[in-house]
Length: 345
Length: 98
Image 1 (cartoon, rainbow over the protein chains, first blue to last red):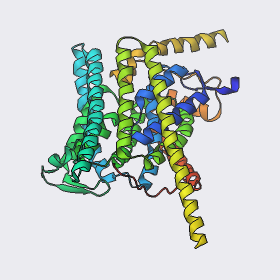
Image 2: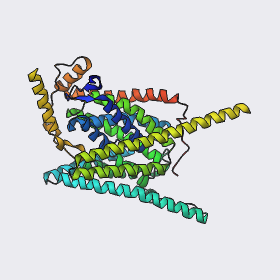
Image 3: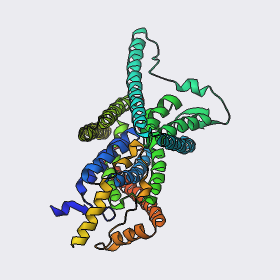
Image 4: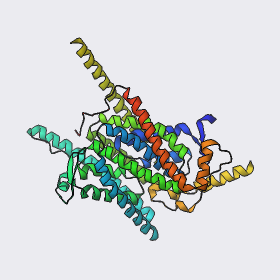
């Protein structure tokens, strides 16, 4: 079975390469579907395969950049990427990450960094999960009421229209997202999500995707695509800085990307067959899994946390594959039926 | 041979003692430890990039970004070529929010 192990030239460890392909594939699937990098899933996976933690993080970030590029290319074909919105947000994100990093350094100086970061992370994840599920419940209730009264459904949580009323120039139109608002709105939202990302030391997709939906008012599909564009840029920056620190294993990045290339196609194409709220609910479940794993880690149940992460990766990616395959089969079948009908006439 | 394994084991021991570098925990301090790649048994591209890693980390970092971008772009184009042949319409979606 020696052929199943690949020597990593920099870290000097031998790694089971099919494991790398599988991690890349699963996280490609999930990332393409939700619009996030998925660092919380990849890092423990790489660590279990035998990567030293320092290399796992850097390798994960570089892989995240390449994978997001593949997903962004696919999402762009569906019209799910608003580049203008993405670029407006990148500025805010970068500034925010820097402020978040400074906050971390201040906490380090007063010796409170570990517990504060972890509990802020837990509270934030709980809030995001609550927001997603509450929004869904509210939307279902509003739909039922609308069906009874015959009126129009008010939908779920919608904070964006109120924020769009702030008309500080310059006003910008974001065509793909279908919104017109002050340029400052996405920049400020990105700044605050960036602070959280920098503070928590995460890529930020987990926070930015719901922020794009609930605060900026982007449709879910566009939020997913635009967020991936941002993950790509920040991932490339992260790959550079982690390489400078010598914490990257390029061979592993390439092996993971081969799996991610296939997974990303499945994840992105699955969004074509999933309703916006379907994506949000599944996203909420992923956030809950992340929350459970962080809490378990806090109480030193590291093995159990890894089991939770790996199980959730498996279950969620299998569900996404099911959405994609059943949707694609139906579409191809309908096309064939349409073609046969046209030939009969 | 014994020295080689001692060296490698030592490197691994150092690396595995770094859980505090956990990114999600807001780690830090990664720059304090210097890792040297063992190039004695490497050849070809692996040897070239590992030597670069040891000698000039800035050029290595530039290569890492360029190669990641190139790999992502090439795989994206290849997968696009394959996906076009599946018969799925990859240019529009009909489902929206609800």
